[in-house]
Every structure is written in structure tokens, then in C-alpha cells.
Image (cartoon, rainbow, N blue to C red):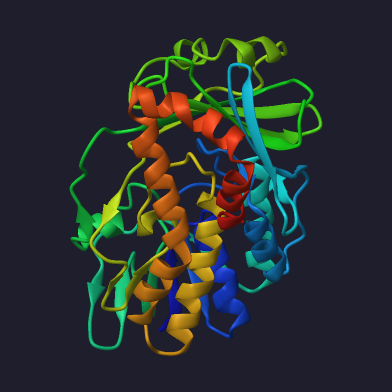
Length: 343
């Protein structure tokens, strides 16, 4: 019997596996797809996420330093620099490959396969033909393990979706830019731009309306004018983004990363939160107190959840969406405090 079985070999699962291996736990990752896997994500890692990657002993993959967050709506803008280190703009595939290599170096074994039913006893959990003392489900936004354990809650309110594509242009900024549509409604949504290489930017669009990527991007004419290079990758989509979860523990199973619940991609903390929850989960298991993970997860994600929920709620109303950037520009100290809360 192994110590820990990790379901899902993405960044959250691999970070969990590395933490566990460094703590002396025999760890196996089960994942059906070959590494690296590309997904529709913004690809910006907050400063706390960069520190978490370094704590894993990871050689940071090649990307672009990020110095802060900038909000843009037409000619209006507000920006706040990070004051606790720099972030990292990096292709998802580069980050995934680097974490996979680090997991291999740490002695983590990876098995190709899928997990069906999860069965638990008083002292073990069995899934995918493997038996372990503990199981961490890091199998993503639509986690089959979470659903199978009855931990998923029905969604409420409008559903938001995301799409992302890369453009072969030189980055014009070292800030992550969040562009708010002039249409001023949640249906119009937002676009956020992340420099990921010296000649590449990623552009993700978020909206409650399901339509083509180019149709969404047409709502941001100033941004579109900057994207004069060729599209470098195909469009990838994800959603609905908001996932409500009853709790993050069920016996000997813990949920990590997007599987643990998700609010929205708007504030760009997905990778940093996944890394933090991976460390918290392993710490709880090493102490033999898995139920403590729920409180730890809520504490480490609280500011992110509150701020993201507030922005999505305000941005979902035309009047509120029109006020976000002007308000941030008029109150730079408040905007800077919000950015600090996400670092």
C-alpha cells in the first residue's frame, strides 16, 4: 500500500505529489493524458505562486516577469505594481513540463490511466486499481472524483465561460492587463492579457455569453488594434467556471486545485491557489489530521474568493461594470490594496 495516490497530473496534482515526496511519502500520480497538457488558462502566476514554485525546488520555466496588474476601459486605466516580488507569465505547457520533471526528480511515480469508482475503508482508499492510505483529487474544474463522492453543489446564477488564444506579438507591457468591455455588462465580459514570452502574449476572454472568440474580441477595439501579429495557437475554452463544493474532504480523500472549488478566472490566482492548497493538503495528511485541511483551504483562499466574487457581481451589472476602472483610477490606494491581497 502506497502512502498517497494523486488523481490528476496537472500542476495542482504534481505540486501535491512533490510536496508529499519531499515529506517522505511514497506517492503515485495517475493521469490519462501525456505531459504536457495545454488548457484554457490565463498563464499568469502571482508572486506567491512564484515563491511556492521555488519552494518545491523547481527551476522556473522560461517566461516573462510580471510587475503588477492594470485595469483598462477605453482610455481610462488604473494600475498597481506588486510590492512583494514579481509574478511570472508562462505558457501552461512550459509550467506543466517543469513540474513533471521536478516530480520525477523527487521520486514520484506516474501511471497512465483513469480512475473510476473510489472505495474507502477505515485505513485505506482504492481507486484505479491502486490502494493508498490517502487520495488527493486534483482532477480539475469538472472533477469526476468530486462528483462521484457527492461533494458537488448545484450552480446558481449566470454561468461564465473562458476562451484563450496566443498572438505572435512583442509584449507592450510587463503588467497583466484586464480590459473591461465598453458595453459595460457581464455579457460583454472582460479580456485579460498576459505576456508569456519575448514574442508572445496570451489573451483570454471571459463572458456569460457563449459565442466565438473573435466575436468576443471585437468588443475590445483598442486591444484588438495591438494584436497585429498572427494567431500563434488555436482557441481553447473552459467553463462554466464557477464550481460550488460542499466540502473539500471526504474520509481519506482531499480535493486540491480547481477540484476544490472555483470562483472565476478574473483575478488570475488559479495557479497560486492550487500550489498553496497542495502544500496545505500534504501538511494536513502528514499530521494525520485530514479534516484540518478544510479550515486551511478556507483561510488561504478567503481573500481571493471574496474579491473575485465581488468583482464578478459588480461587473455583471452595466452600471457597476462602467464604474470599476474609473473608481480604481480615482482611488489608487484602494486598488493597490486589492492587488496586494492577491499577491
